[in-house]
Image 1 (cartoon, rainbow, N blue to C red):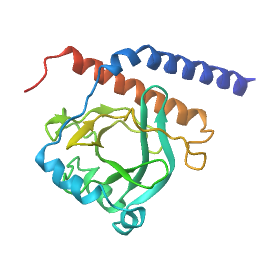
Image 2 (cartoon, rainbow, N blue to C red; image 1 turned 120 degrees about the horizontal axis):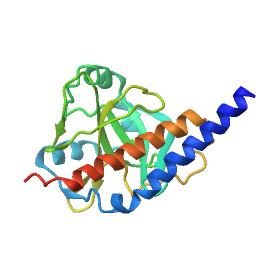
Image 3 (cartoon, rainbow, N blue to C red; image 1 turned 90 degrees about the vertical axis):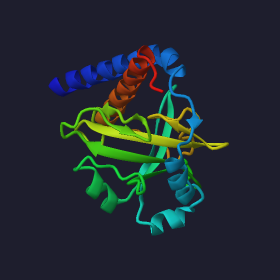
Length: 210
């Protein structure tokens, strides 16, 4: 009985979180837009954008088995993590812009679509990367503690999208889609999605930096 009640409560909480995310999608649609890429980002992008999956692996990045997306928000694609770079940068909260610890791949892993940096919350306060906010977000499946996450998605014509999710990415392939996750995984990513929208709303409400 207790397990059944917890299951019902879990589903209700997930539905409430997803409803909250849905209610903010209109604001999110006004959120981050592609910008002209800073020169320092252009340099690191040039090193990764045209790599094949084999070259990504040879560089020490290990693709995770799931493609991540959120309804009405887009996707992150598949994360390929370099354990050595991640372990050197994450706990010290010192991201190295020339050595991204995470490469973002398309759902079929045929192309590199972006780069990611993460940092532990060690009390450092607000962070920036490439002159843009490096937001603090809640934990998620695989990394339960709150931490900073910075995603950069490639755009044509020398532009980049600095955003948690990319509305142009999806997980449509059955062999790479996130299949039947448990409730904790669903709730975890729902919380991350809600937090991302909250951060986006806060940015829209304050004066833009120049």
